[in-house]
Length: 178
Image (cartoon, rainbow, N blue to C red; front, side, top):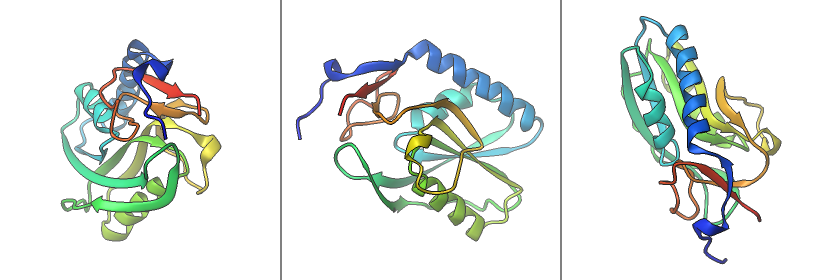
């Protein structure tokens, strides 16, 4: 498979629009969790940029945890199988938990993680937040409680999303024609 370059990318969501919409989501979360503690569970590596920017606008006391899951091999498509690389979490019993993900497409990773937390903890609340929602690819009956953008079936890179480990550092989201 040919390596893509930044020149191969077409702009989907620019830096300013990303920040503007993330701030709107933070305003919603600030109202919902006002005067409550919140645990953000970031799914590495893709969601780290989103969680970092989102958390800067959150006003409640919060703790950040990080887990590593994967459903992508090399290339442009999800394998459909979730690989729990590192899923060690603190005691989340009686806590407000918000899972932060970069993209929900087939839904397998989201369902795996929601089921894992429900099975292992009795949380006060458990919600799923995704920067991007690719409903057209959904194979599992699950939807995020919050999402910032709904996207079409394109291979997306930038702002945490990668191609073979590259391009996570781009301040915008682009796509590759496949």
